[in-house]
Image (cartoon, rainbow, N blue to C red; front, side, top):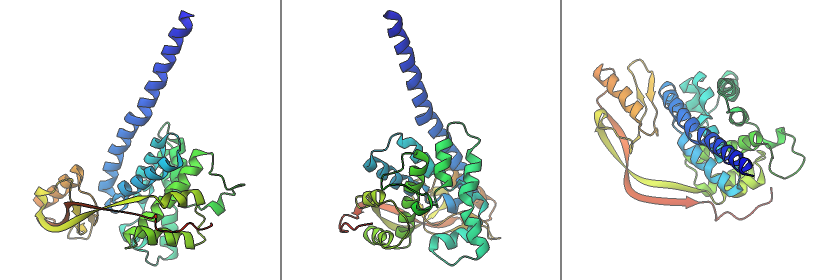
Length: 285
């Protein structure tokens, strides 16, 4: 009996150590990776924190297990965009017209993301979520209206809805208008996921515009303009949150006199306005 108790304690400790590895150590490593990628392609990674917020809210309302996997997928969703030119991404995020080549280039980024993540142990399901982020339900051959039981497929559908929701809001739609547009089109969103978007809270902190020295940037600020070198290379994107790595990068370029010493930013005023999509009436999907 005592041996059984000792074995049980050992097994419990192993399980907890595994959980700590997955939820803390691995997540921290991914954060470092995304910080580096932010410097490589700032435009692609300027929206990941918002997407992660929406994914987290959706997962909690759906009561999914192991939310950390879905949050990691949101953080890494744009990793394949390192191979997509910034000009193309600007068109995508603005809802502009793309050439056939540009469209294919963008559609390929989830598979590139999966290839990059395939070399990281324990991220198999996360890589599946990333690779399926542009795939609609009609393309996945569901046999019922139930949510997918496979985390990879479910995560891909949650990620897709969160990203499209964010894109619409970024283009000036309110939360209610964004959900209405997603409901009106035949875009294959799962009805249960759309239902959670009725309760999504979109925190909109009232901001004030200010011009500051790049040396005075801090992580409470959001860039109000793209920062480019004299030859047009994009260093940081408009609407990007200032991070330690971004600030250091820009200071280095200021010292080389490759960019101006000041930049226009948005600073939180301290007032927060929260909107949600509850006014939308239920609709059959």
